[in-house]
Amino acid sequence: MSDVWEENFFSDLSRDGSGDFDGDNLTDLAEHDGGTDPTLKDSDGDTIDDDIELAGSANPFNNAPTNPVRTDSDGDGFDDAEEGLASSDPNDPLNIPARPPGFLLVENFEGEGMTNGETFDGVNGWSAALPSAISVAAEECSSDQVGRLERLTDATFSNAVSKSLDDLGFQILEGDTGTLFFQVLASSSEVDNSIGLSDVASPSGFGDFEAQSVLFPGGNLRTRDGADFRDQSLFAANTWMNVWIVVDNASDLLKVYVESPDGQTGQIEITDDGGVDPFNFRNGTTDRLSSILLITALGSEPGSFLLIDNVYLDLTSENLTSPAPSKNTPVDFAITSTFVNENGELIITFTPGGEGYFLSGSVDLGTPFSEEVDAVYGDANTFTVDADDLPAGRRFYRVEKR
Image (cartoon, rainbow, N blue to C red):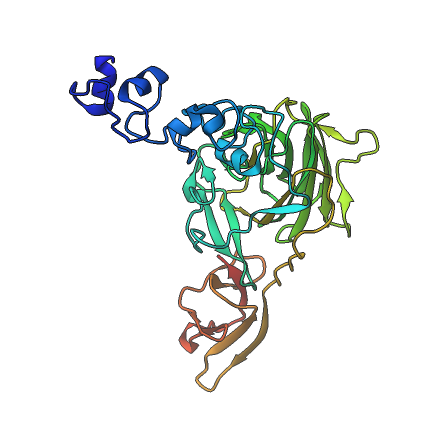
């Protein structure tokens, strides 16, 4: 055994090769020669011990040996253990576990690890270049939790956010047609957010997209068609939409449907412009679509954000049904009453109320509104302006969201 190898794993040269340090029925010398880790029973972490993987017909698959240092011996996106449970062949990339029909839930931002106000980077397989720019948020006027992707004001690079589908076994395989469904809301018409699918396990930039749909500044809904972007429709700020991205991973083509684009009702195919239908993948791929990719670009208005929820995949078909009920668009807040009480205080009541509001004022509609820092926010969705703070002349007030 190489001294360097011994020092690396055992920190000394005391082993003579005949022992079995990790108790996996392989001697230290056999692990040295086979390239496995002599300190771990399961070198690749796929839940199958090294000796079982090397035993051939004695392993759970009753076939040729699998690779003890590779969780997915045939590289088909399904771990060896997963294939064993499904009775598919871990050494044949064309022999895979059966694909369940219909929509499968990928993410709803609920459950363990999804904590309101905290990042979801590192939770459920999510990864972000800027972890502080993504968080779990409470949906306004609802008990639902959603994902929030913010354009940080001090960001100097685009934030790529991805989730592995290989980890779930939810890949859209080469040759199959599948559908990505999600619900999305933009806080502003000046966001620049791309959402779609990638054939890269850990994507990090725009070049890793295959299917790419974009909420673009100016309120434009656009889709990448090969080398080009095409503006197809409009979206309204602060309005939930259902989106279906249908991908043909045999011909590398996609269609995008939205319910409802700004100014239209119902489910509209925004990739049908009368001349091009469907569109092309950004790069073209001969591989499975193995991750969901979302990117917040620097073109987004600083401080703006995107909300996303109820992400589903149909792995084997074009599916234009709705796996989640449509979301209600948040009610615009408004001042509902104003009066001066017996103490001379101005009481302003507004709806729907909640956290994160402030009162602003202006001497006339032509002068910019500024925050009334002395106004007191009450528990009953009211602001109170003390009598001493009221101007002698006319003043205009409005309630704003921070």
